Length: 113
Length: 114
Image 1: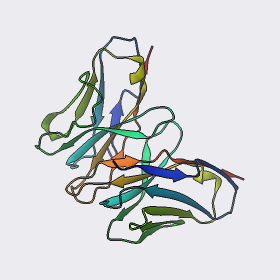
Image 2 (image 1 turned 60 degrees about the horizontal axis):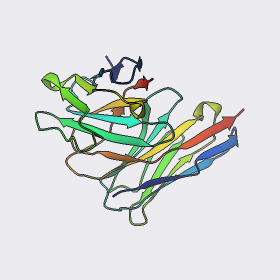
Image 3 (image 1 turned 120 degrees about the vertical axis):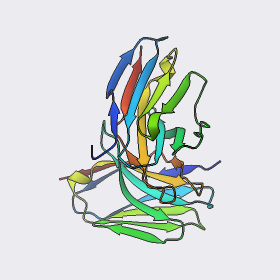
């Protein structure tokens, strides 16, 4: 059974810092990996989707990498802003044909002005 | 609408009552998922619909839970004889194609069972 772990569980940084969120998974036979953002009381917003054949994806100040063989992904946030404060969730897709995702418990990020 | 729409946004019910939660996916999306997010827990897969295929019900926690998707669009998740442990946020997601796997989530329905 796939297990997804996110470290750290919580992170507090001052505005402007670059930061890395970590995600690890136990079964490397994945189909894709997706990073989401969740604001309090809200649904999930998709940030980046990496297919298993890809090594990284970039969107603005966000960069996600995938090392399937070692079962790891990182989300890099450059020049953090208070508006980046949220919970970040990593989810791994297992099956081709369709993708049911296994989620980590998330990293709660607080960026202070 | 532009995104996945869920209703009600909040539901408070008494133990033993039945509840229905509704999801209206993004127009044209063929895949629809239900997930549950309990306090302090990760998201838990419940059920998946893809087109006219039989749904994948492997995540439903008990036979009190059921879901249907009418006309390949709107879905309803029904919980019968609710229990306090059913209290959670129920999230619906849709996906445009089978192979991209990218999910787009609604804002969820928060269920509180007293």
